[in-house]
Length: 345
Length: 274
Image (cartoon, rainbow over all chains, first blue to last red; front, side, top):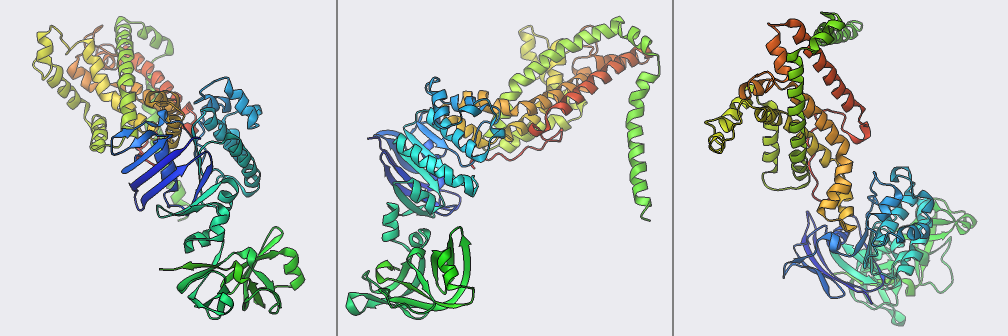
């Protein structure tokens, strides 16, 4: 099994990058806000950026070892890097772009067909749509038969409609390639749908890495929780009745959670765990927050609703049935089992 | 009041254009076109044409040979002294040609810095065709390099980065990506350098002299002939006008999407990383 080992430390313009990562034949997504140093990691692996200190090795063969002075030039690292804006050569045809780094010229046509751009072989990149460019960039990277695939924001240059289609194609492609792949994105949804493991990065540091569902189920950090889409309710935790933890919220009221904790905490609640009703329901939920609706945003067949400090997501049908309007006072409820506790320093 | 301002603009523009166009037109209007062709066939004119072609071909080839890598390095690498190096390249652009001539004499002349050693080896530079070539390279080369630095600077560094990650070493990246993308800018630079070289006068007359059939170029022949045979001077002048106009048209016809609109683009700051 191919494996890429990375240990990096680099003082960038404003963030200090610190990272240790081992990637097998899997897709690892690095997510985080822009400026977190994600792209710099890809550049360092590709050899386009030399970190102050660090080791990068593929299956034990060093590409970079600052301690012993090893620094393999980019052209000798077996890397397929797909740039954020795709960086297609504007003066070359699609075919010539893909053939540029091809290890085996006879493979080019096969790859063009595989990515369904065979019909565009003679076109210049300037004439292609965003989705087509993305496929050409992928084809060009794959034609190199790289040992490692690096994708820098592969979907961010696409419009919302193309994005969904391309995401599905990309997932299939990554699954069939089975290469160590590092994907950088600022979108947790992209990361969750494309990657086996997701690492959340802030200011050059890896806060937490795990499967997307593990990050959702047990965020180690308020930032990770927020990044997975949760809203945070800050408060003080202490043991409560029935073995639950009772959190006195800063905004007023209390919340109960099955997680255990004492002291300064944040309660993370994901929108899909939040139910909205006109009056407090008589069901299994123990947490009820009564507040006016701050905003109602319809996204396709779903409605994003902000009730006081909480964000909820309900179906457009439910919103209609309840006749919800901004300013209406409603009750947002969630179960104690759906409330994750994060300890704050 | 509202009427006066457009009128001023119009009059100023008209005067400017007339002032710039009339002297050029006068060259063609002074004598009949037939006489111009006859005068162009004179020994002086033909000798000057041959000298000009020989020296220009060699000078421009050397400018491109040395200037292209120089421009690429200055455009793509950041190193201490880079700004100084670019300023040094620009210096000949603002230097009075007579100063260039005296400088070249002080370097390659018989008693010059390098000239004395060359003399000892039996190589005489001053007042030979080599001197014409050197003078042209000195005054015209910077036009090519300066435009070349801008042209290479405009090549997106992600494209050259992409070439490297696709297995191309620095040389192949230069040849297959940077050079083709900078080619139209380099062509514009070469055209400017060519035009400046053809018109070179001051440095050449000081450093190479004006010996018919040896160092007398077309520009020098215009000067030599104007009190001997004014018609020949006019004829050579007319020929130079045609060549210059052709160069200008060449530059204008280079697709604008690949070229900065200015003939003298400023050197864009290189981004070592993006």
